[in-house]
Length: 136
Image (cartoon, rainbow, N blue to C red):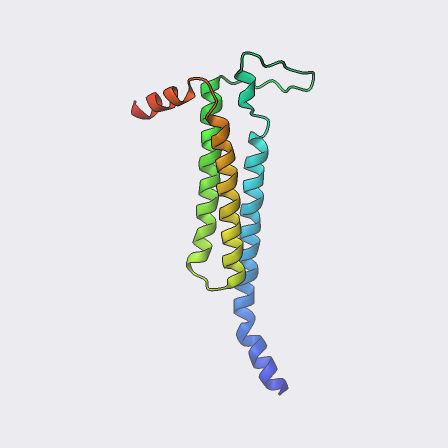
């Protein structure tokens, strides 16, 4: 009986090691997604409204509306790349824990990207400038 348990333990050892490796890498990707999200938090499109009143705690932005639009677009693209990188882990595994983690990370990055796109929409003249930039 003990020999059977030992064989089962040794047989499952490579799978557990692979799971631990995958989960560590996915945790790093999740952390990266949060760092990207944190960096864009202070980039508020409300600053470009005519009635915006800065406070003492308002951090200087130092960007034009077009630059802010580009910055937020890059953040959204980075989040998309993080989600796609996570999906690569799902390609070679059938481990349900890893697959659930990948699915959660993809949902997280998609949600963050959606919120960033909502920030881009109200920027003045950004959509026109972004279209010009992609055409040229």
